[in-house]
Length: 329
Length: 256
Image 1: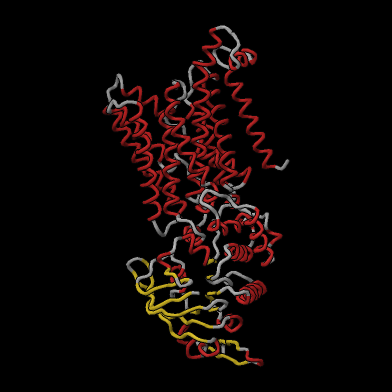
Image 2: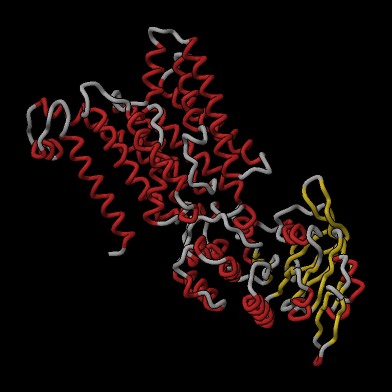
């Protein structure tokens, strides 16, 4: 077995193990026997059934879907912007989606409209960052993109702050705050029912175009000379990745770092070929967020927001990335 | 194969060159000479359809370049840009396989046949041993050869090389020129630019002298590469010396 196959097998194994563990641990422990009984429809105590199917089931599934979606979107952004340091957070997609959703909550819209607003916000933000970043000539393009993302993100963040200031402090403000911190605690099967198809819709073009995605990592002229209509392809993939990010953000709120960390880790393991990278990044992203969320609900008597834990893990990783020689990109 | 008529080219809103006309037959090699900033790269990018012409016409295989899709152009014309370093760490084999994209369906990945074409391209440039190395970890010269291999994997009828020898040592320069000659005798048309007029003498059938975006002269290298044209192009005095067997070389006046 070569090292690439080993990476897939180990990641898939870790994912399965973590899923079983996530169902088992918590305020109400469930044994593996009980878990399998529920899954295979044998009779168990109603308490166990409720915990597995109603309480932990949606949450575990949400962690898997959101983690995989954020990692896939990050993988696409990094390839497309020829830049291993970009991610939905750094490009302002998350903040844009957050602004859209906060606006939706502020206007007391229904869940579907809030998700639509999140999608539109994310798309506008990444479009703005890419447009401005690519026009800042005479700078290192990588630096220009990252800094533009930070600046636009700050601008959008202040718009969010304004909406929080104006929001109804009894109904809207708690919803907004909870949502900005990111959480998987209140996921309902209905949320999953809207988010998962949207994420899959975003994933489909990435899977189908996996070979062509590689060419987006080349300088534009080269990709076009090799027969790729880069503008069309890039627009499609940006829309797909933003759809995935927005679908994730709309159910979980903002959970940072997954889209930056995971694609890079996956690239270190199997190289930059998108067809190999995407499945591994999704496996790792799902496993990572599930592990983080399980820790969040078990390490303390109160829930820790998952964004806090991902930041604790992500910050040193990001610094290490900067320090690392660029050649391994 | 390629026919260019009273072409004006440049960037949107800024014309760099005009009145460029020439034709290139199958199996013919043309070397474009000119100073830095003389418009060589911009001309090449226009011929590849990467920049829109400002006036005039470009015909490939008797169809207008305008009427061809990106994939149709890529199946006819291979492009070797000036070396680049900002790549992801694709292996040399994956990198060369990218040359097959225009031959693939939009949702397909390269198959066995494509792999065989890529291997042949790697072999023909003597870089097969590098196939598993990341393009980020090979030397500039090796990367240049990988770019040529990628263009060959396109199986083009016309190969456009922008200063293919620029970052190569003397041996690799000669190897690339030999490769150009060999490809031309297999029927591929070749358009390349160089900073060394000797390269035109060594392997080009014709030379195109491009000064400030206009054609200064075009014709057989020994007819158009002269002391006066080189001085006009580069602003330095050069002696063109005829050697035995019809060969020529350029000797710049330095410290004499």
